[in-house]
Length: 96
Image 1 (cartoon, rainbow, N blue to C red):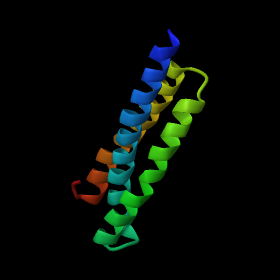
Image 2 (image 1 turned 45 degrees about the vertical axis):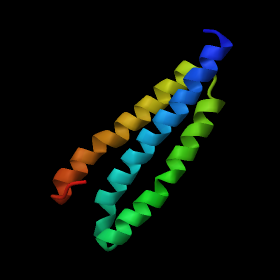
Image 3 (image 1 turned 180 degrees about the horizontal axis):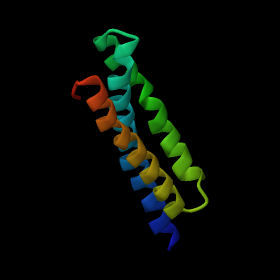
């Protein structure tokens, strides 16, 4: 893989993967936090907390040994968090 291709793949992985991971984190926390907070506060807290995985994804993508490894990690983490969302939705009986 050429250097330009690797950088382009890292940029796309950081942008798209970071957004998808942040959205999944916000969705999962929005469903989990109403057990300890009011619903509106839980959504606000989840939205603010979802910025952390987005930033960490960018750091992970550019710190990884290869662009494909970064893509694999980002895809795996995103799939894992989105797999939890339907489980939380069925447990709480609410939707996002």
